[in-house]
Image 1 (tube, rainbow, N blue to C red):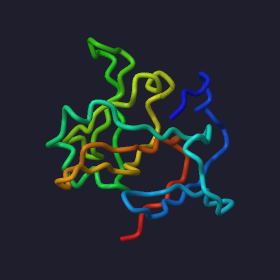
Image 2 (cartoon, one colour):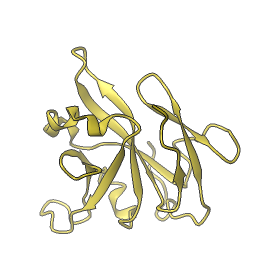
Image 3 (cartoon, rainbow, N blue to C red):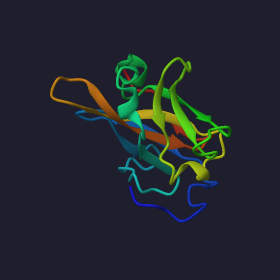
Image 4 (cartoon, rainbow, N blue to C red):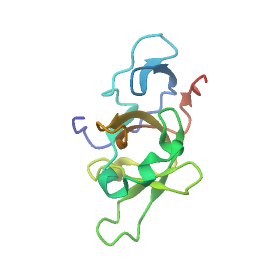
Length: 145
């Protein structure tokens, strides 16, 4: 994902998003127009989870399946990066990794996050995730079972 200008993620327009099933996760669709929603849309962030390789066992948890809600947890006391934002399952039991450092300072701490896409190795183990991050007032469709 390309870097955006500072503040581009802060948008006042309420967004409605459908999660459309794909091979390894979900594509995004604008519910208002029915059109595909680009990962470069300034109203959202779609990021690859940083540091997932350090948490490979935790990453196997079903709580990180595509379509599942996640928790974004700021870590102001992180000795390596005071802007760090951890990505946890919704119940904060297991951590997947972090929002990439280039995007973490843009976040206010009240955003929504959803596991969007997964990457698996030849053995079928989950080795990475892409996560949708949206403003707190965005409507994100819960995937159908």
